Each structure stands twice: as structure tokens, then as C-alpha cells.
Length: 336
Image (tube, rainbow, N blue to C red):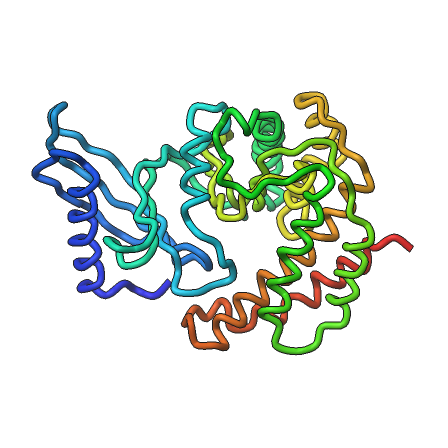
């Protein structure tokens, strides 16, 4: 990523101190230390820092990670549902970071942002895709299926996530198809007849789900924070919604990042054993096909952001060229 100008970091530090002063009732001597960018993501910018203050319980020190909404990127989602979902999941058995504070409108931190407690581990999933990382990859994938089963069997009504759009078994697939089609129509820059045909097929083959669950939406190895062979947190909940849990399984096994050391059929078998949720093969195929369309539209959104001058992120400059491979995969998987 590009180096952050010192004056920008200093301004952000001042903003953070003012924000925490407003959130920490009665706190004094607030200090921000070791503020540094971690990544310049395509939907969020990530910073780490240490917050220290004195309050009613004496001196406190917390390692923090802040997610700031990017100027523009490949996803158009609000931070509030992500923050509130992560907060609701704390102590649920699903590994997440502790959600601390949110500046929903970007009044204090210039852009919408939220802050979580820092969790140990790495998100580097490339070693998990290499032959020498096979044993570690399998161990992480085996834990990933446990996380999926736990997430999808939570009683979301009792968990208090009614801020997520409501879905029924009959509407879950249709809502996702409509959502991504609307983004396609908004961001396409040229005709895409294959994409148009893909949406026709998806509309005509929408399955009825067997249950409604919290769906992570970007459930994959790249969003796992792991330490040695242990998953410490699931990250990047920006696409969270209520829907068909099979959607998460299909996304986890896209060819770009699927854990090859833990085959899909083995994952599904273990998932059913743990959760009691039967995975219908036709439904799984539907969501695998939707996944290729979904990633194509994410790419189109990023490319459109760059073309419109709303971001200078060079990673997005040629993202539109990637959709050919995704749509070819769609066609290869399409039933005769």
C-alpha cells in the first residue's frame, strides 16, 4: 500500500483521541500509541493502535484494530450491520473479535469506522494453498467447518440481529439474486450477455432453503485469523445477512481459495454431522453458480469505482478483466 503521510496519521490520532473521549465516559489522560496502517483493503482500510486511558477502574490499555470505510471500492455496504453482528456474536461460540466502538456516520473519524479489540494471529492464507502447507490447511479447514456449523445453528432471533433484512425459506435465494442483479445493472460499463443469461438461469432455478441462518457472506480461508493451527476469529462480516447457510459453504469452496486438502464432500459430510443441516446438492450448485456471478459483480463494482475517479486504488483498475474467468467457471458448472 502507499505510505501514509505523517500529517494524515497525526490527524487521525487527534480524531481518535477525541472520539474515545466522547465514548469513554469520565476517562482522562487518553493516549494513542503505535498507530499504523495494516492494509488498504478494497472495502475497508485497517489500522492498528494501542489505546490507554485512566478511568474509574484505574488505568486501562487495549490493543485495537480500526476498520474505516474506503473512499470507494468493490463493495457498497454500511459498517453498522457488520459491527452490530460482530457484537451480537461475542460469546456465542463463533470466534470473533470484541466489537468496541463505532462512528457510524464518520463524524469523529472522517469516515464511517468501527474499532475492535486486537486478536492475535495472521490472515495470510497463501501458505494454506501451497503443498508444504497441506497439514496446516487441513487443520484450519476442519475448524472452519465447526465455525460454519456453529454460526448456522445459532438462534438468530434470540441473538437480536433483527436489524438484518428478514428472509424466509421462499425468499432467501430470490433476495440474493435481486440484490446482486441490481448492483450489476448499476455498475456495468458495457453489455455482458453471459451475465444477463446467468441471471435468467438463477431466477428460474431459485431453491427453497431448509432453514434461515446468519450467513457470513464472505466465508473463506482469507477471512480467517489463525494462530498456528487454531482459528482465533472470523473477519470481514461486511456481507452478512439472513439467508441460506449453504451459501457460505459454496463460497468457501470457490476455486480461487477453496481448501484443497479438505474436499468439499468431506466438508459437507462433517458439517451435516455437526449441525444436523442437510445440504441439498442442487442447492449447493445453485449457490456455487451464484458465487461466480457475485464475484464478477464485486469486480465490476471495483472497476467502476476506479473509472469514475472515486478511488485511486490501482488494484481495482483492471478488475473488470477478471470476470471472464468467473463466468467461464459458471458456464462449466452449468447443468446441461
